[in-house]
Image (cartoon, rainbow, N blue to C red; front, side, top):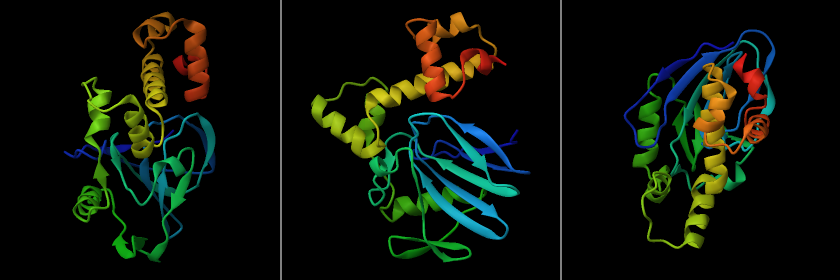
Length: 219
């Protein structure tokens, strides 16, 4: 079990900032996620900065022992053009080291952020024009009318988020259902509240996106 600390900066780009640490060797189920994030791992005096793209299915992952982790998940619509998210779906990219405390981004050495100043790191990316935001994505997800064609919208979604609008909504609905089940809500009620057609439909979604059955999640 991990103990997490959270920071909720007032940012149009960052969903939140988290940190935790591991003990001995372990494994966990990495659930599907519609957002991408930066993850910083410190272990045995070495630091690794990784970009992790959206995950369209659950998977089992090993946890490095005696490591510290810092994560910066981004809101839908935020992206770095130099790192196309379509290439990071179910994948990750480790940024090259410039020194023990710096990484290379677009030919410049950047100080690796910590939990306290991660929001300043993001603010600098924005100022340098390396982190952008497409307002169309957020508007469409909120159900606001868009004047662009469906074809243009599909292209923009894939370009900015790495996944289709349909896949994004499926993942978010599954995460909502997972949260309800973990709170002890009855499976039949979760089917209704999360908008699934029936219990088998919910079960398939939970196995795919959460890696567990509804009954396992309730436990």
